Image (cartoon, rainbow, N blue to C red; front, side, top):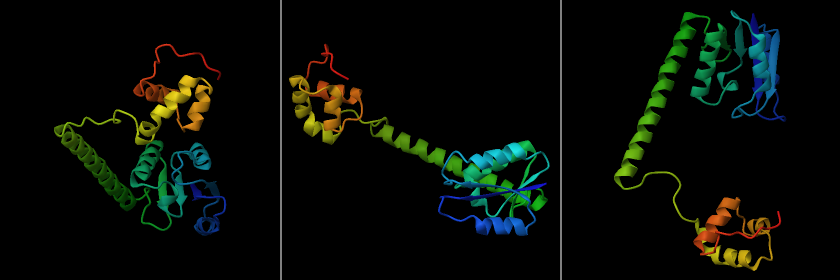
Length: 199
């Protein structure tokens, strides 16, 4: 059995082109999503995977309807292979129920694995180069420039006790209480015995 899948990125975009192509190909059961390709959650694609059975073929208008990157697509095809489900594209030479289509996917898998290996090698080379220059990675120590310039003002505001810590954070655009404490410590404030403040 062939089961169709169509997707557009926004509610405003139209599914008609994909639906017409799937209907013309004789696909009777079609699942549709209106979500970004970058989204990790595609509700109707998940429903399709629950619906499809071993021996079925998932049909799409184009492969990018399933994922935005080659690696995403390869992972999806590998998942289908484990389930015994084939994949067919109406606009590209992909049909994993045929020997040629399977060969094309295997080539994609080799290319994707090569891409992963190259990325790993570049990352390792970058880290080794940084270590050779005395840099070990991670977030740089110290305050960001915006807080470095304002730390004395933040310290004064805190020590006057006219504002709650929450109000100080909002006033100076400080995202977390730990960042506030780090700023105060850097400014020389005594943070060993914080005065209980209003929430």
